[in-house]
Length: 495
RNA sequence: GGCAUCGUGGCCGAGUGGCUAGGCACAGCUCUGCAAAAGCUUGUACAGCGGUUCGAAUCCGCUCGAUGCCUCCA
Image 1 (tube, chains in turn green, red):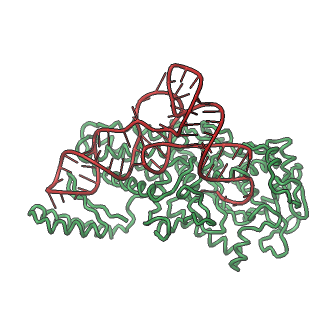
Image 2 (cartoon, rainbow, N blue to C red):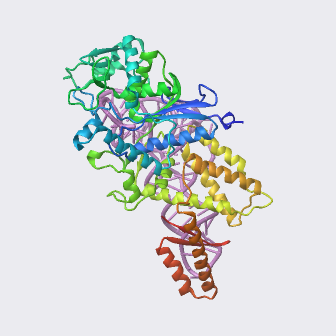
Image 3 (tube, rainbow, N blue to C red):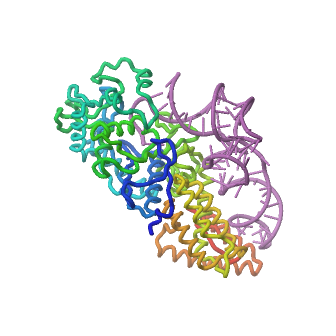
């Protein structure tokens, strides 16, 4: 039996504002679309949090036994610097500044994006479509919206008529906005542009003669509006209505609102059953922004080459740190918070290793089955990874007690505990074990360490503490820590 | 200015009407040649004010503060 049949999952739907039982359109299958990055610069850490959150969600859905089609796009055209008429495409701008082809910009930062995500152990999506690869699909949607009367052409550009749409549909239902309020609060009154209303957004933009990124269309050469690609690609690969749409909180308005409007205006159906929004990451209590210097790139954390933290942190530690907060809460990144997570992460990983060597008894002091269900309950409650991790540490405590022979576990329970811990820690949270080095090297290290540990223990038996402490201290200086326990001495390598 | 979210013990961070979150730090103890590691024990916190209630961190109102969006942003 599939796990999802016995583990009812509730998720917070941004559209309704409440937790709902998750029921996919087609039993056993889930279609999920997540807005990917615009590849005009290095992916920054806040982006990573969103993709990390949805990676965890993807992993859990798969774990529950769903066949998941996970689509995450790459925006490589159409994303404008601002909404004004002279707004420049972000990628075209970067290309102009660096005097390279736009596709060189796209390639460079797509590679960077994949690179970083791989370091975080983020699984690749099922399909990763690009905006430029779906120009035809986007043009087709514009035609439909025009035919349905919810868009108008002006000087070779096509705009979505928000005001007209709002007369028969609810524009703003996702973000809780009212069009009247938005019109009343329009700041920029100077807009003497092609748009009938400031709230209208571009479906197709005319390309100026100097614009390099251009495609032919029924309205002349141009390029698609940013919001349109997601509608085109989600429809193509997941259908007109699909299960889950995710993205960062900042995309809720206007981007996701526009997606709903486009879908409803072209084929008359609300496109998404469950909207999920991952919350922002702040740095030292403030929004991350390049302009203020309150910003850090993932690689700068991994290498330690930055002015914000005193030491490097591994991708796994950063991932663990993020999993300790709920995806829908704002999370603040700081040195002390990372240090705390790093210690906790190591404790968890050492328990994972200790678990393999645990002695078993004829009885158990730990109700593994009940514990396991509590872990599932946490995940089933809108992917509550902080609670899951709290439960994992309960298991850590038990493992250490059993290791110390202060508690017992049966072989059967041990196997269940091992399987569960591996599923939660590695498969769901996506944390990696410590087998980073090559197997051959690690075998050699084990041999050397065995020798040093036995030499030290001989010295200790002879009360030659000068020698034994020399071994211990010099190993410590190399980053290898010795741990004396009831079962003898073990070691761990910090990295 | 508008909309939204939030304000939890030294720090991070769950919890949403009555019962222990968890991690890190700190302290005591056990273990140890001494340490480290590991274990055990200890912390009654919920921005402020008022209200509803037998009972509120949890519901309502106000005040203060923070963050996000409203213009490109995950």
